[in-house]
Image (tube, rainbow over all chains, first blue to last red; front, side, top):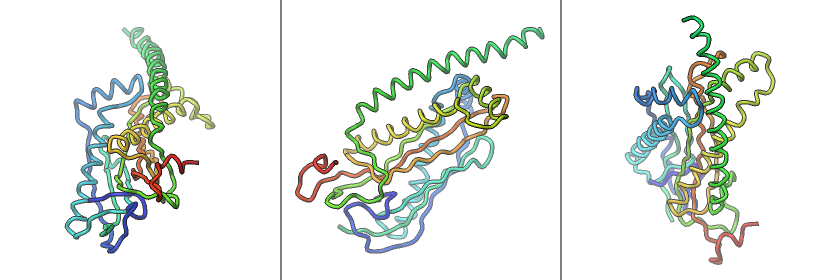
Length: 105
Length: 164
């Protein structure tokens, strides 16, 4: 699955459109990570546990989106956008969406 | 006992200020070092490749970082926030985070063998709001993403020749 946040896949031509595909995941922070993050929060700086958590979650959202495009018979997703929203204290929704297409070339 | 409680907050503030400042300085010098070595990946916010540049392969690349402000600066920011205006103590934090996210995105592109990233976008999202008294997480996630491509010019000369 070719994924791009541009209008088209660079170097390829779009031959068919399938519509919007999306994937989302809601993640809550892990207790152990949260305690570590609490200490880190005192002195500032990167909260590595959360960075990893969000990047894993985003990866999962992208995988779900890809699976959806795959089922439609597409081989690429263009114009991918991301949205992050905190739905509750300590939980965040990671959402990825784009347009499933078939490309050639 | 009560005296002890009153003594804890200033000590925590001072500790957070010293450690936070040291960590910030270290991060800034690290960023300078990494940025000096990241010039081999060109990040552009333009959507399409300029004429004459041909993409051989492409990939979505993402760099993210969750960063938080130290306790002392959160308290200062909270106090300053009451009067409005420019809250300078928060600016270096966000700047550091953006630079770090961009570097991570570039590193991912470089690892995949790409030399250019087009349509770069940077998003900022708060994970939790900090309270005016400085308590609570003040985590902010910065995500930089774009489409990494390997570029060749039409006549086969390397990309750098086209680079103005």
